[in-house]
Length: 194
Ligand code: AP5
Image: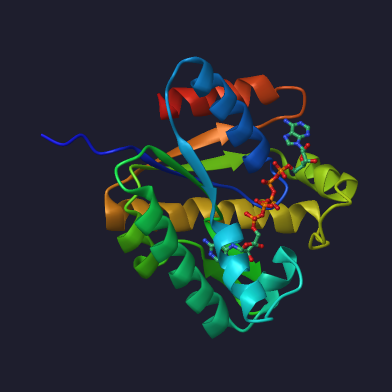
């Protein structure tokens, strides 16, 4: 029997620290000789957006017309599915994206069908901590919103992830990434990936 790789989708609101936790987990797993490919869904979308002169930076993508975002999503999902094969893979993405027209599902049916994840991880922490991380990250053009709006986005992400579980049969796991407790968040993600 062919053993298929594990497909883990890691999500969380912008600035919660998904990429930081993923990088920490990858380092730990490499030391244990457990191989994972980590891919960033936004990077796949941005490559297409850049080629078509649609966005100057990745933060501009969530303000594009909904139909364009969906097309970029589809292109990213097919690209990732084509390169992942039977390898263990981590997809760094968003359960939902906050657009001017409302929340856009990050893993709609046409994306889930391509990725078919085993697990969707929601990285979360207190909204005040996320707000402070966004304010201190000068490298990005983060949306300016308050703690209440960030809390609402995290709630929406839990709700929409339940729909992903219903559709694909994946499990949903919450990993906390608290200030001063990054190592604990990494431990939790490693336990999901092993
Ligand atoms: P994307 O590329 O996913 O954004 P990103 O760069 O990955 O990262 P985020 O902005 O979400 O931040 P992060 O959570 O990774 O935090 P980080 O580790 O950097 O998305 C770009 C765009 O692509 C989206 O806006 C969207 O338009 C599009 N897109 C992506 N997926 C899509 C999809 N499925 N459908 C449609 N569109 C999609 O950390 C942030 C800061 O916090 C850092 O300074 C870090 O040092 C700090 N920090 C982290 N952890 C801790 C801690 N424990 N304590 C203290 N500080 C911490």
